[in-house]
Length: 121
Ligand code: HEC
Image (cartoon, rainbow, N blue to C red; front, side, top):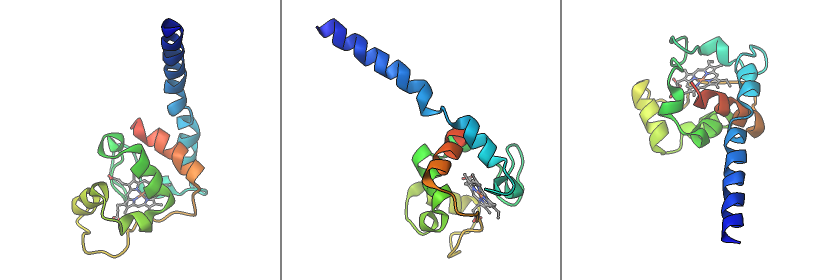
């Protein structure tokens, strides 16, 4: 019994691991969509455009913060979490009431896919 439970536990975890980032491909397509998300109008991976260079962004941020930022930027900007504070300090905009990051409305599901993609950058 114990052995069977352990086997089930391992199987569940092995199955869950690739699922976590299964939508990174969809996220990449959304990220590169100049019309639907406009991300690439202001960002690139490997150089600064209007917004910060997104190389290494998956090391600077958690998946949860990225989802929140992408789907509710101004709400995130005015919250006091340490990831937002670090970003504001890095771009020297601690005193700005609004972020210059602005996109068409992006759903939570789409933001989740984009965050999957960004976590691998
Ligand atoms: C109009 C330009 C613009 C667009 C479009 C835009 N961003 Fe941004 N983004 C910015 C700016 C500027 C910042 C830095 C915060 C600030 O200066 O207000 C930023 C910050 C970020 C950050 C934090 C980066 C870091 O180094 O911590 C992430 C992640 C991000 N954007 C992802 C995206 C994604 C994903 C999209 C598309 C869904 C997107 N951005 C669309 C301008 C933009």
